Amino acid sequence: MFTDAHVWEGTARRLTAAGAQVRAVTLAGPGRPRAGDGPEPDAGAHAEAEAGAHAEAEADLETHIEEVCAAIDAVTGAPGGTGGTGGRGIVLVGHDYGVHPVLGAADRRAERVARIVCVDAGLPQDGVPPLAAVPDQSVRALPAEEAATGTTAGVLPPPGREEWTRWGSTAGVSEEALDRLTARAAPQPLGTLLRPLRLRGAAAAVPTTGVLCTANGVGIDMVQRLVDLGDPALRALTGPGVTFFELPTGHWPMLSCPEDLAGVLLRAAAGEGHRLTPPGASGTPAHLHPFPLPVPELPRERRGNVDFYFPRPGGTKGIEGTERAERAERAERVDGPRPAVVFVHGGPVPAGAEPSPRDWLVLAGHARYAAGQGAVGVTVEHRLHDVADYPRAAGDVAAAVDLVRADPRVDGDRIALWFFSGGGPLLADWLAKPPAWLRCLAAAYPVLAPLPNWGMSADSRFHPVRALADAGHAPPPLVLLRVGLESPEIAATVSGFLAAAGEREAEVRVVDVPHGHHGGGPGDPEEEWRGAVREAVRAVLDRLDA
Image (cartoon, rainbow, N blue to C red; front, top):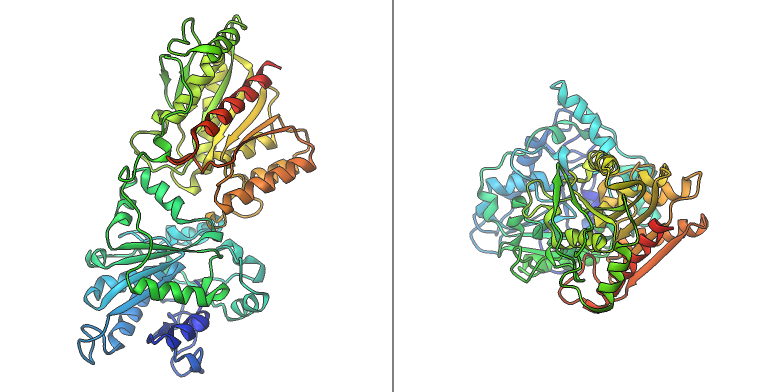
């Protein structure tokens, strides 16, 4: 988006030194160089900047696909090329928006393409316009308005120097490189974003590599967790021809670490990289692990998107020893309406995932465990299927809480909310305006600020760190279950949240799982998890009883 071939200079120079033939393609658009308009991006690197045949604002995705096809046809020495049938074939590399014309061209020239490499970009789907992949949701709305009127002409202005983070993390990009990126940026034709990508199916057989820039918010472990959730659209990522690499940098690795990117591209061309496993192939996925503590046998009462688990006499059947006595004592302590703990799953979770979140053993286990301790345990299923769905998910949770408080068996003045993982941003509303009946907020291995590739601005509504820092009142007591082996990007949001809590002198109880991974894992120490979950639940219930 907004760039030309100059961004590839450093990477091209290193690839050329390694013996590769490199061709950097400048796609058509206003303000971008035509053939003969200037010197090559780096003559020493022998990287050729191909000019678009059209430089007008009317250029669209089809224009760009044709330009990449032309670049493929001009390459000699690769299978099917005009200069012979020898060679290793062509590796097509697409960054950000560029993966759309790359995939479209590979679909039409599949016999010439040895591998597709997606640099910090998703794998586009047939019939979906590139606009759907634009990270900044506020920016996405502008061309969407144009699309509603049937207009595809016009341009999207390039970002200013301080606006590049709306398109991805600039981690690792030097001030000088950022200045040059801004100076060379050109408008993006709206037609390139609004026209759906049309695929015939041939590209599906071409081996593919994803290069994930972890400082932008996504790593291999996160993609594996998404695959484990069962989204059919992601199942193709487990194919034998699909590999992945990680780079610990932001969204522009060709500017922040061109040498490392070149090395990864050479390894990708050789077929190397990490391979994902199909759901369940390497053991039980994290979200389907059993709850780590014994839970009572309690019936589930389902109403809409809410499941209730109520305490009952004899609900400690199957629980032995001291824990059974403690549960029985707490369960008998209250006569009448009980306090409730509402557990909110993370996400995004694909629509139609099976089993659905409310049936995950770990989520239902938390609710049953809380009920065994004398509270009403509640699980809520919400519609967070994409990072753009946080407003809808927040509405689902708020409506569910109203339903819980209206139940005569629940003490509506003693409610705790507990959020998991990607449900963490939903904390923000409750931090900004906590009602008097909200006695405690809890979070387990949460994301506590939008990740860079989510496309949320710094003033996003779903930013718990900012909500806590800006609140004009004392927040409710907080309980935070933190894993020691969290991904650096998520861990940074937790650190930011705790720093804000310290400045506000907020009451925070941190419960650590020192050797735990995000969501738990088969290799995690069970005793650590059991002790941490037990301590966190007790801390929440103590605040409900206070």
